[in-house]
Structures are given as structure tokens and as C-alpha cells.
Length: 140
Ligand SMILES: [Fe+2]
Image 1 (cartoon, rainbow, N blue to C red):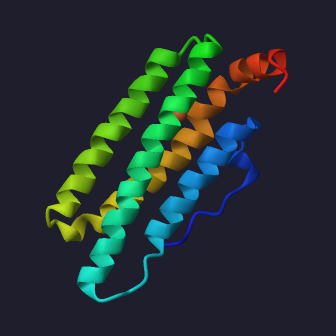
Image 2 (cartoon, protein in one colour):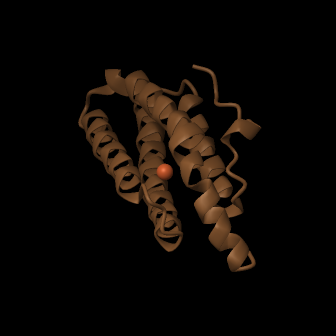
């Protein structure tokens, strides 16, 4: 599977969000390009990387939700629902993988890749003007 190429289309223009989005893409790219080690070693690397991706995702969603709240973003409830749904699905997938369903590796990566790029490219862009306003107001 090809690594994700970061493009301007994914940029919100909000530095802290863009930094976090790039970090998510970097971890996902690590997952896409885990080398062909001996099976048990490879699984260990995958487990650790998936775990890192989940933890960073939770952290990122929390900071995004704080921005949206501070900005009184009108569609915050729907947006948080998208975050919750992703967390639930990702946690289920990863725990199945870690319990031994190793053949779902590609399915997990494909799902995360599609979700992330769609979410960053569409849903996240919708809150940008609102968050920009408070950023300007606060002189970021
Ligand atoms: Fe989001």
C-alpha cells in the first residue's frame, strides 16, 4: 500500500491542528510501511504502532473538540459523534488484531487511511472558519 502524501488540501491553516494531523499521517505511514521482519517481531512493531496511533488519535480529538467548543462551532455534536464512532471502530479492530486476527491488518490500515483523509479533508475543514475567528481574536 502506498504511503500517504501530505498535500495542501489537508491543511486547515491552524498550526496546532495541522501539526497534529501531520503527526497522525506520519504514524499511519509508519503502519503502512512496517518492514518485512520475522512474523512475531513484525506483529510486535504493528501492535506498538497501532497503539501509538490510537493514543495520539484520542489526544488529537480532545484538542480539536476543545477548539470547537471554544469557538462555539454549531456542528460540534455531529463532529464529536464522528470522533466517537472512529474511536469505537478503531479500538475494536485493533483489539481483534492483537488477539490474533492477524489477517485483518490490511483492512485496518485501509479503513484508517480512508477515514482519516476523508475526515481531515471534509469534516475538519467545516470548523476552520469558526476556529480561525477565535484564534485571530486571541492573537495566536
Ligand atoms: Fe475531527
